[in-house]
Image 1: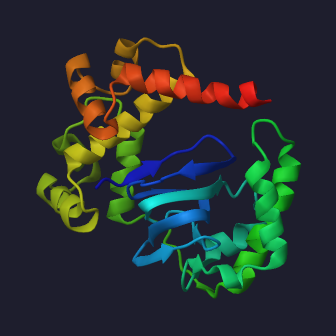
Image 2 (image 1 turned 135 degrees about the vertical axis):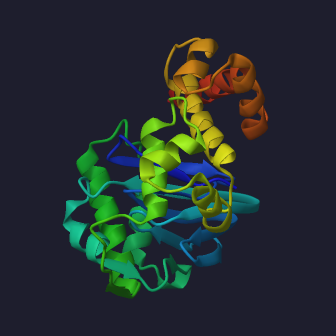
Length: 271
C-alpha cells in the first residue's frame, strides 16, 4: 500500500468515481465523498468505516485517507481547495471532526438535493459559481452534523509530512532514500522505519506510485510520446517504466492511453 502526497492544481474537482480503490494519500485540499451505490471502506487518519449508499465522508486538509471498494461502488467525489471555498477556512484550519463519516439518515434533504445536482454538473463546463453554491449547501449541512473539536496545528510539519512533501517536490529526479535522508537531516534507516511502520509501504513502492500517477496524467492529457512520458515521470529507463506501470495499472502505457482516450469521447458523443 502506498501513501501519496498530492499537489493538485485545480480549485475544484468533482466527478463520479467507479469502483474506487485508492491508496492512502494526503493533500492540502478537502475531499468529500458521497456513496451512490455499492459499499466502500474508507479510512481517514485512524478512523475506518464501511460506507453504504447515502453515506458520506470528509477528509480535512493533510489527513491521510484511502478508499477500498467492496465488490462494487460508485461515489461522488468533490475535492476542493480552501481558496475556492473560502467561507470555510476557519472550520477546516482550526478544527477536526470527532468522526469524519456521516450516515445517510443524518444528511439533510437540502444537502441531498444539492448532491443530486452536483452529480450532473461538470466543473469544466459549468459556471464555477453554480458548483460553489451547491457545494456550499452540502458542506454547511455536513459540518453542522459532525462534531468539530479544536485542532492545534503545529507551525512545523511532523517528519512524515516533511518526508512526503519533499518527495512530492523531487520525485521526477534521481532520488535515493539516502538523498532524502540527508536532505531531512535523519538516517535512511529511520526513514525506512517511518515508511514501514507508519506509512505501511516501502520507499521504493511509494516513489514508483508517485511516478506512475504522474505518467497516467501525462498519458491522458498530453501528446508526449510514451518514451517522453517515462522520463518526464522520473523513470530511469523505458524498460523500468513499462514494468512498473503494468504492475500498478495492469495495462501497458499504450493500452491505458487508448482506453482513456475512448472514455473521454463519450460525453461529447452523448451530447
